[in-house]
Length: 106
Image (cartoon, rainbow, N blue to C red; front, side, top):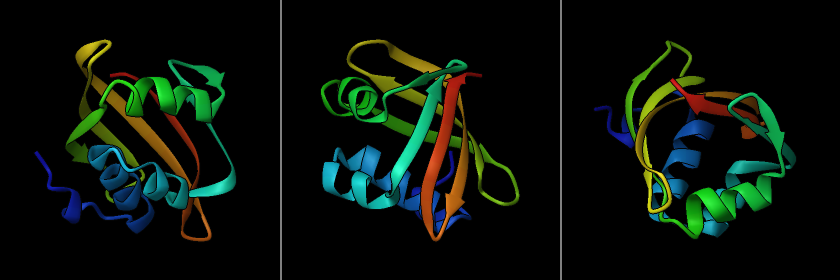
């Protein structure tokens, strides 16, 4: 497992830290104003998805690997709704914040 503080990209590090802390304010601060996302290839409403998949269900990411830029992660993701699964996360960063992320089963 890779410690969150060892993630290469600061915006991704802030995102993962916020998810793991269940910190909505820090999560919002890690995102650009009009950030978007997809889950298993389908675009989703980011706010609704985050409430359901992260905050209401206590989501947590254990990062197993990252690419050299720190923009693609493989993580064991768990929450109260789905249990644990291996997931892939791809991030787009603009101006030091996450503007898009794509996640799904790895």
